[in-house]
Amino acid sequence: MRGAANGAAFLAGLLTGGATAALALGRETARMRAACLATAAETERSRRREDELMARMRALDAAKTDFMATVSHELRTPLTSISGYVELLRDAEPDELSDAQRRMLEVIARNARRLRELIEDILTLSRIESGGFRSEPGEVDLAQVVERAITEIGPVAAKASVGLHAEVRGPLPLRGDGVQLDRVLANLLGNAVKFTPAAGTVTVRAAHDAGEAVLVVADTGMGIPESEQKALFVRFFRATNAIRRAVPGTGLGLAICRKIVDNHGGTIAVASAENMGTTVTVRLPAS
Ligand SMILES: Nc1ncnc2c1ncn2[C@@H]1O[C@H](COP(=O)(O)OP(=O)(O)OP(=O)(O)O)[C@@H](O)[C@H]1O
Ligand SMILES: [Mg+2]
Image (tube, rainbow, N blue to C red; front, side, top):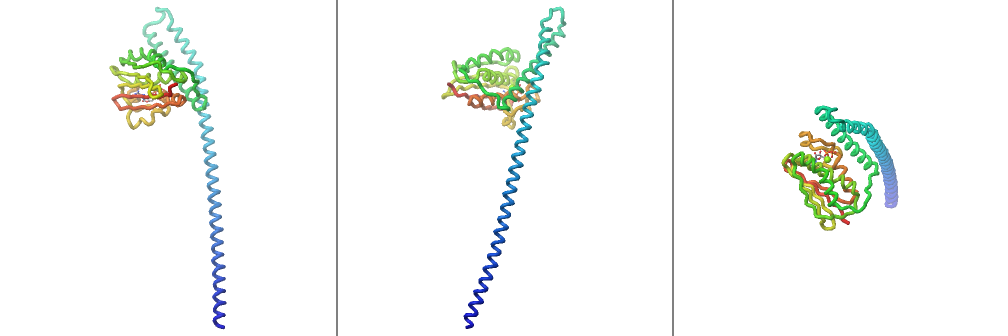
């Protein structure tokens, strides 16, 4: 009899204990579910905040690109007028202007040209950023592109007493945008000449190699400090040694070159050592 009573008490205890445990488990599950819901809500809120921030940044970037394009465009008109009048004055009769006045005119003309190049670079950059900068592929001979660039830069190199050598094995056909490739060559050769002091040399090599057209522009100039080389293709970047020596420039050329080379499915790499020289290598798929 007592055994049966004990058994019943044991069973009752077990049931009460089980019910308490089940209740505790239920509460814990509910707490965890609430915590999960709160976490999901927080994740959703931060995702929405991130989306909003991204949208605001994109709008800001688009507005900045738009602003750059508008200002550059508006600057062109007065600049064209300045350049036009400078040309008229340069054409004046020999006795109409003194030597000093002619020298001043040259300074105005040089700076107007620099300003025009800067405006063109900013316009190109804003076209790149708005996605409107595409290459128009055609048949291009890289050897001719190099030849044109050398003809252009020749007098500048001679004036700076920088030796200019070309080792080109043409023709080097490839599918590309001739105007844009002219621009790459002009900037790379322009950089090589302007960052190389008198008595230095600039060498341009172009050849086919394993299905690629390879262009190398090497100089014996001031080089770029190693710690700054990773920023080379960032727009408006200028190395500290170039700034210190007051070599003119805006820091847009290489950013534009990189974009053009990307558009052609190629690569651009720079190897440089300060006070030793710089070598830029461009590889483009050959046709
Ligand atoms: N061949 C080089 N030798 C030494 N430094 C160079 C050379 N090429 C580029 N650099 C460094 O990289 C910077 C960026 O070059 P980039 O061509 O973009 O600008 P820039 O020549 O200064 O101005 P821009 O090309 O817009 O007229 C230069 O200011 C210079 O500090
Ligand atoms: Mg440049």
